[in-house]
Length: 105
Image (cartoon, rainbow, N blue to C red):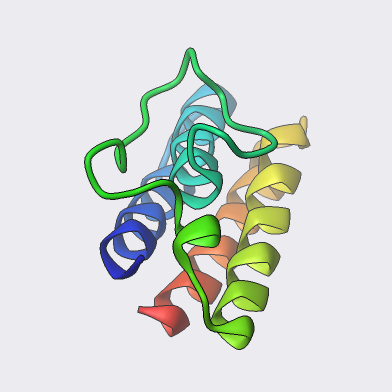
């Protein structure tokens, strides 16, 4: 899960640095895909899965309860960013997701 968490954090950072809402959403989908894995709720099969070769998703691959809670909190932020219609709000959610993931690396 460590490499999946690292990749998810990296893509949340890409989302935070995007100049438009579509870029934020694209990278947050990548973040979600890394977190939930291909069998997880919210997985976007039409979006890239940067963690494809790393495992089944950081959340399903994590056994530690506290780490799993942190990953689920980051997932909530990523999903909130995807749902946001305002660029600043979407980026703020991406920054928060990245921050949560960075603490779990």
